[in-house]
Length: 305
Image 1 (cartoon, rainbow, N blue to C red):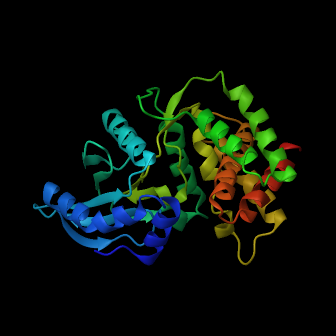
Image 2 (image 1 turned 90 degrees about the vertical axis):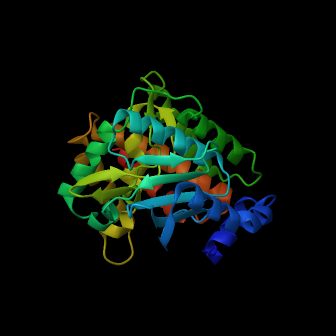
């Protein structure tokens, strides 16, 4: 299996010092994983983070599984830590079956049919069912080796302030996000998935399960933030407008408040915090950030009502 052009481009951009050596060694690394766990590649996933390689495989018994690997990155280690903790807790998460000690190669159960919640984004009953995952996933266990959500914030915001290209408008969003986060600091810590959006929620039989945890420690209410601001554009025909964003974000937070133990206003606040962090990461990576800024403008207006 060859690396795609998009994967090669992403690996070289994100890991410029080590990309070429890893790319050269990649065929042997894949062959080692396949031999180690007795796997045969059936197909490659067509979506996902481009620095990760995800393969649909079979083991020697014919069981359908997923092999996930990629250029070494700390989030692969934290993913393995979180998956092991979820396995112990019998959470609705794709089960970890194998991983190498370093955590850079993992084998997971394959979810069937594996359709994503994004494909049902306008189905309110499906959305409510998936939101129960955001209610039940946070675990009052905090394994060693996981970052803290407030560390994510402070690191990203510090890097932005030191970047040399600070925009006063976005800096005001950072300051508001930090203010909104302060009341959360006294809440109990949990292990969070940390990236629980529509494309990481898949149907397995007749129930929803989660894939691809980042693994982060923080208050349970933060789990829903990423879900509530992602893929708004999927819910409208044509170009999304400011009024669309206001309507959709308000409705999403109101619906979520019927399932989660938080008010719609609190959920708007954590959504603003997460959207600010996500947009900050985009800016630091040199990726387009206009969509994130537009979401922040809408959320600020809703929070001011």
